[in-house]
Length: 544
Image 1 (cartoon, rainbow, N blue to C red):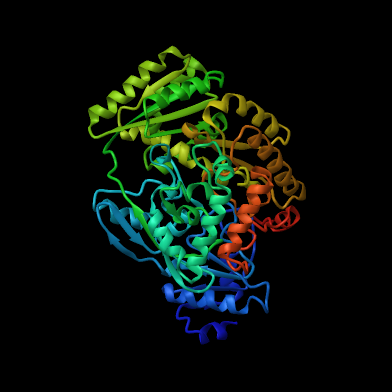
Image 2: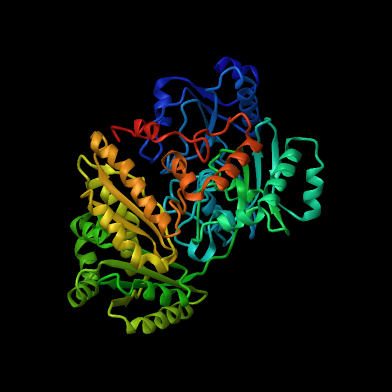
């Protein structure tokens, strides 16, 4: 196979040896799936050649397929495949940066793009917690989001133009179209024209049911975002590609919009003794428009206390100095007891005074509630809380012993006003399995990251993954939520999409896949035509 790919003029590296392929059999999900081949294209022409090769051989070998992979930091198994991996790591050029736009290749690390845009005084704000290790191709493929999404939205809001290699091996450019521009595209006698004609028909014929199928949550990365493509004023297929997990084509170039960030910030920390007033408190805080509104639970809090030296190490400070800095919080615990939930609301402004006044107004407003609160005086004071929030996953992973962090119910979302009712029911489900776990997340939009510790060498624990997934997703669906706000479907959640959306919408997802990729070349088993639960269980990494 390697020789045949070379014969087509592929210039990048090709790997078929076990030593290299083992590096591609995992991402940060539960799964292990070794490919038969990995290729590292140098440029878009190489991607066109590998897609053309697979398309030409697919009829003779149904097992052939392609999965694009950027940094491999996804938590759902979206970058895994047992056929051919396209590692876009060498397509890592930042092509242009202005005060309003950045154009990049998919292998660019977010941290490098961020450094380049900050030189212009601007950022792309939908970065996830993994911003120091993730790449922009994966961010776009999963519709990533993070702390600033509460104010600025998910990645889908910031992708303005895409270049994509489609199933015919040609590269096309996609962006927003007016109705007149759409009509011109529909006239094209190419795959691009066929896609525009068929997608327009699909969306128009099912317009109302598609619009009503959009999950009633602040953000969502499950399924295909058909509801965002066409509002009868603008037709924009970047809204479909973003979050499609590489199942419709391979990105070769991404253009993001940029914003000037607020320079000053003030963090307010709230200790909740119970969840009774949670929805009221969240609602009150949101009226004051925090830029970010995060949370972590009592399990995370206790882990941070238990493994305090790790927090010290992360902050690069002395244990005595850091301990003294927590005296106000110790007093808060003495007054109100250990918190059931810790809320972090950060207010920003163009001046120190503006940020401080926003925080003070929120503080005064919350005095009606029986909670302990504090506004951090400096960014250094705030950093200790952000470290606990960000390090919860690493603390679990490092101190779990034979048990390992197991992300499978790691990204649920319900409307924040439903959390006081939802969280006790979730706790009852979790209690049944007697697992150690943490819950942290984006409380402002109701997105929770639940990470249990499990020993996946144990067959019973692998059974629990399947049982608990079903029970938690059933609960989430009963509250009108989504099983993934930002991590996407991958191997772990695709099997539940039909249940979440119903048969009719799921068939529209299948039709969409068929329009773009009739031979199922791109990232099979994700979004539609997924694997059954037995396959998922079989490919859980038992040495994870």
